[in-house]
Amino acid sequence: MRRGVSPLLKLSTRKVPASAKRTPANRFILVTVNYFVYILRCADDTLYCGYTTDIKERVKTHNGETKALGAKYTRGRRPVTLVYSETFKTKSEAMSREMAIKQMTRPQKDKLISS
Image 1 (cartoon, rainbow, N blue to C red):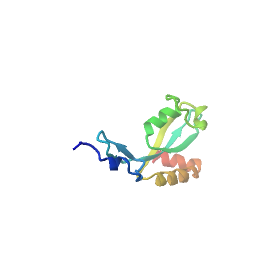
Image 2: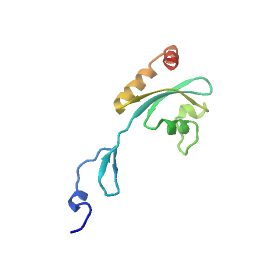
Image 3: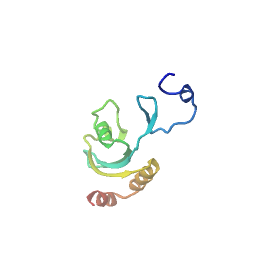
Image 4: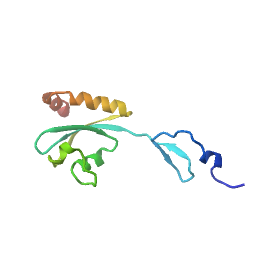
């Protein structure tokens, strides 16, 4: 008998979560993903808020250190520095918090950053 994954498993049409990764044995494992909401201070002292799963890479992107362009808003306001971040378990929690921060006034955001 052959070792390895059953041909029936390979032909399976069941949906696999987006956070699943393949192992060498062609089995799926679930990977825990954290979502971050962050605030950047731009060179012109404006603030930019966003969410991501990899905060270090996202800041590099905003600063033009990767092949990706980053947000249009921050491209002309480089360099940017990370001044605040929060961690969430789900994307919807992070997106809700991002929207709440974006609706804050500048003094409220400054108070959040300094806390």
